[in-house]
Length: 312
Image (cartoon, rainbow, N blue to C red; front, side, top):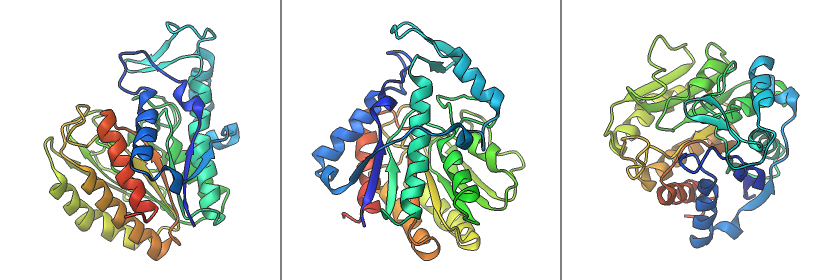
């Protein structure tokens, strides 16, 4: 079976101003690197459907959804934005893009559980892991990974899932969605102290958050994976793994101050694949989160996908 690659043109129509690092060019940079690395044709490309509201409200409150919908600009003018917070804006296409992003994660979950593909990567935006059940924030509108994980548990009948988050920022929204839920194990590292300044104060027993200082390199992260992530994952024995795949811990990415390189992302993916093979019939859905240096982002996604698709 192949690796599926889910995306949609609507995800590129959401934008927050030419100054904003979370730009539509991120998806094009990934596509360009897939082509230049000659793996584009080896993936099964699928278009993301629109998520249904019933899937969104498993994670997000009606009030938080209404705030996005009711404040979405009606004008398609390039100057028409609504600011949800200092760095999260809406344009006329943002809500539809968010539904495509969450829809990609759900469709990927179905495709993997149904055995249509071995695993899947969702090249989507807006990202999701900062969106809490009650608030959109940090570039994120809908928590794509949390929506998909809840769907797997409550609609597809899985008993245990894991979320692996390797973004440079703590996935506070995902933690808020699942803290204390024994069906869900979340493992992550994140630069600390750093936005959103969370993840270190009395985490729930199912949250394995590992803060690391700025300027940490791959050796630090690999030790965290070996000493903390893998023992927790073996104990949990997840039936499916969801990855919040942020690539902004790359040494070329100015959004953070960490020092990972493509080989580190490939190595982490290998470790996740082994856990999935042992306990989850290989079932993995990976969703794009951060990554703002366009070259480093594209190269890192290629490294991630080469492992997922067994192309090395």
